[in-house]
Length: 71
Image (cartoon, rainbow, N blue to C red):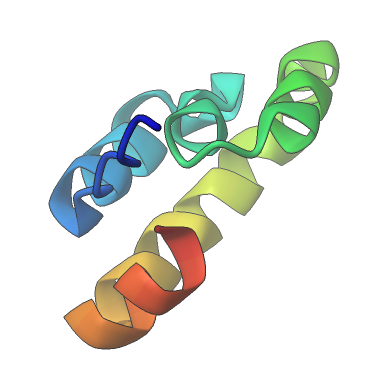
């Protein structure tokens, strides 16, 4: 069986803050359904605000908490 790749907290934060309005950080974290929702509603601007919140939230999580939740 293939071993799951560890997700980088820093990469998730950068993706969320720079292009999070398109849901790229959600796809990176394996949350495909949420990523698609971000893409569908990207024209409203709401996903950009949510991505900013996501990025700050990821930054505030400890490395252990981030790994437990997203790996």
